Image (tube, rainbow, N blue to C red; front, side, top):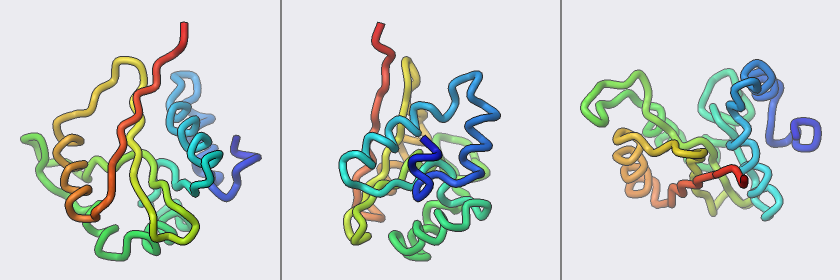
Length: 141
């Protein structure tokens, strides 16, 4: 997938996925990123706000503005505990015109949203006026 979608995934994404693939980390997020790419959207995968993902951070700033990025990346108390960072959704999905965007949180199998995620995702929807979709992937047996 990395080779086919270099505009979406960077070498750091590939390195993370290779190093953690034995536990199938990143597969659900990459699977959903590819789904939205096939639907005609552009996608910024996990860690799109990380300074180590310069291209993704720059695109996220174009879409959300500096204030939106600062809002997503600020420390805050959620769910009763102080987090080092806010629990941003896994994917930032957008149209090439940058005017239409939404977030996607991917859960697999029996994973559920944490209370901090539920609280923060409502804050995102209100502040950034966009949807946060939660996708539950389950293996077909």
